[in-house]
Image 1 (tube, helix red, strand yellow):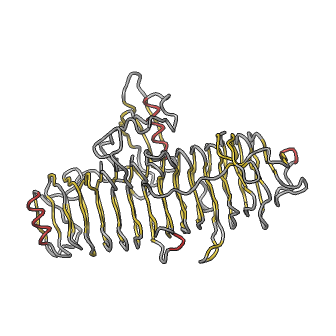
Image 2: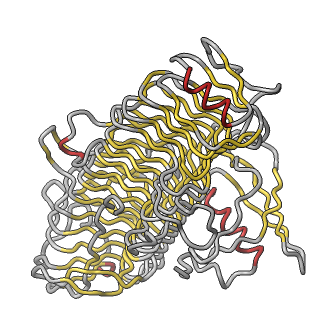
Length: 537
């Protein structure tokens, strides 16, 4: 548990704060003013989108050494994103003794203690509202369609909330503790707004089968940790939905969960689901999760203005530690995604369709600092419902280890355009050593193009990669083309192995032969890809 996956322990306290704030890279410019002998660092950032003024945050020195020491969460949870801020806004939702503004209530009952809350819940009918006065409450089970409204997350705390099947419930303006929030099967048209969920023993927010909900301006902090700051109490998905009809997540922040930050699956085998879960995620920050930052299995939807950073392996098993996984016949679109400093991969696309980025939006996709793979694409092709395809456009893939972009599993229909891979560092990784055998070897390739895969690369710049700008490991698939721009600093420009010496991938005929290294016998073992994450046990 005492690992230092980001290599931050050697940095001074102010530098650790600055490195932490790098996760906002695409949206913000960061500066740090240091004072000799100070235990605080003043961190400044300016939102690039929207042109907001400089904001100044006094950030306490962070202990980022892994699970062994969890830093206290900042007083304010709201972090700038393109459409506002992710997390719970400061202050109460509205003034007055209770707060029902903006919610259509057939009737309102105000409560101030556990006894009156239990009585109100026992008599409430669908469409009615229970208004919580400032204070602490043990927990409540709400009848279907009943709303629970507090003044704000800093004024109202409650141990747990469960909403039974029904339509139109609103859960707003409170902090929820160890029991988390459960939206039962068949809870539809539900809304969770301005809520903090912290220190749960299990999941943070669970959406049941056939459910439909919107989560907005929510902060999920230390899910699965209980009251401990050193060892998780169990395991917890910050946001979990399996078999739901639809989920919209907006302006929401997840920090330090003892499990995945966002886990969405349509059914146990996503490719066999009758109807995929519809998902829309906008303005999301996920940082410090375990196993995987965001896992999408068998779903259809979009990720926009999403940042996933600093995922570590699951504390119980040591497995995974990836950023974003799109798997099991999902179909996902994103034009604004930042994935950084995750311990395994940045972005994994497995047996799915995905449109990642837009050629008209350069640097809309940034994948950086991940410790084994930047982007890995595998098993893309045909399935029962049609052809799959993956496009990667306007992407900056930089400073990852092992592999910048890898394509494997006989994938077809892969298009890369207007993208770059730079600064891929050496990493000891599982590799293929021929004839189905596996081994371990140092790898540092900008592009890893595995045997049988079919890619159309319209433009990809490669520079500063520790082993090869591009590795062609075996015969490429028919219909492939490779328009590669080789920059400085690649130890080998292009390595082509396992094919006849007269064979050259289409598009590379104009490359200076001195930039090409050939090997008939796979002298440069190619990295093997990661598996998609599976649910925690």
